[in-house]
Amino acid sequence: MSTEYRNFLALSYDELEELNLKAKDQRRKRVAADKIQEERLKFLTDQKGVKALTVLFCDLEGRLHMLDYDKKFLLKAYENLTFDGSSIRGFTAQKESDLRLGIDWSAFYYGPADVFGAGKILVFGDVIDKDGTPYAGDTRGLLKTFAKEQHEKHGYTLNAANEIEGFLFAGIDAERRFPETGTFEYVNAGGYFHSLPGDPLRGFIDTVAEVQRAMGFENEKDHPEVAPSQFEINYNYGEVVAAADQIELYKLICRQVATNLGMTASFLPKPVAGVNGSGMHTNVSVSKDGKNLFWDPKGEEMLAKFGWEFLDRILTHGKDLCLLFNSSVNAYRRLDPHFEAPNRLYASAVDRGAMIRIPIGNERSMRTEVRAVAPDANPYLVMLGIFKSGLTGETSKDANLRSSDKKLPDNIYTAIEDFRNSSWTTKLLGEDVKGRYADLKQASADRCPRLLGTLVKAQEVQFHHEVYNQFLWNQF
Image 1 (cartoon, rainbow, N blue to C red):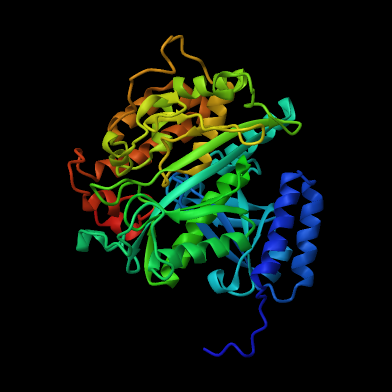
Image 2 (image 1 turned 30 degrees about the vertical axis):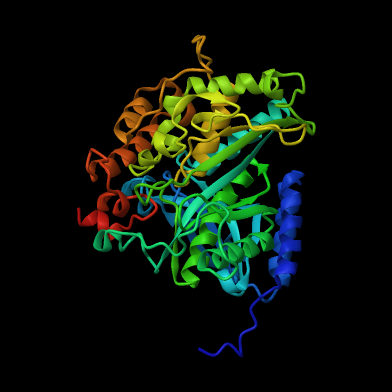
């Protein structure tokens, strides 16, 4: 179709980076919400080339949902955007289906036209219940509320950076076709750091890195990972809600770029048996008045007492949180000790099999690294579980807490049982949301063989929450 008569916004990558970094800086500096809203509305009104706003939110399991609103309609109706919550798996029942979307004007992203289409702006939304209060099932809202409370009560800023691994497979929709093909086809047979400038994996990584840079991610490094066709593209840390938003955007960008190249970006934790799986190592710290509270040059491993206490609370609740961190049947293949699996419930500065690692750091970068997190987990629940447990959780009386040989569950059924039986997860999420989340995980598990075995089963892919579609579930 001819585009010669269209005049939709399409900015250069340099212009996009400048706009996105400005928006990111406003968010970091906590510029007043009304001021940001006024600025965004003026931009949308004045910029004739914007045709639509893509409003993003996620469900209980972390699947990203998107609604496109025509700009002219949105400018008149942004305070009353409604949608059918009963259509979102795990949200409201049919009899109480109406939910609203509020615009989080600070979480505003200018996207490249060659990836997201010309004339579109991406923005995250807050899910609001019919009585005007934040919707209890909006996990992003739960994290946002907790982070705001910690800043207002204690002056804390919660910081996070994620190392998100994935696989690049040949062909479009490789995950959906897996029940028919029974295999995933590599596009690169190299390994750690190894790729040639012209191979498909390198081309994919380079393209994703360019898009991320344009969207203000502030890239650090990128490279092929240990397994064939595996990748990791790292970027700078951020305040916890923005960091979780970037996880969702990272996976969206990877999937879109891969599709454009005729391939599939997969974030299944262990799509191929016999090689290393994919993780989402989550590096966290807490700062106050610009000072990193985890840093103490005289502390054990240079981690401050505050950081050790934070770490101890997470270890205490490690089994409680396992289902939030490893939320799919397939994730428990990754917790295999033969492949650097972080399945040991203790902390270490050197052992990559530990649930928590203490990397080498300095005054700026000192942090703890929660390694037992899969890339398909709901990022908002991961962050809420880590920070709420680390700051307000209980501490075990176990003298061997930091050097225990205890292991995390090796299957989702045990993880579901631990999650359901835990009083801490009720405090974390509330009884209703906890129950709904556990039921969703149980339903997926019940559709899969109970024993993992040595081969990846069709059901653990086709009923996986990120691959899920309504047709497949109705065929069960």
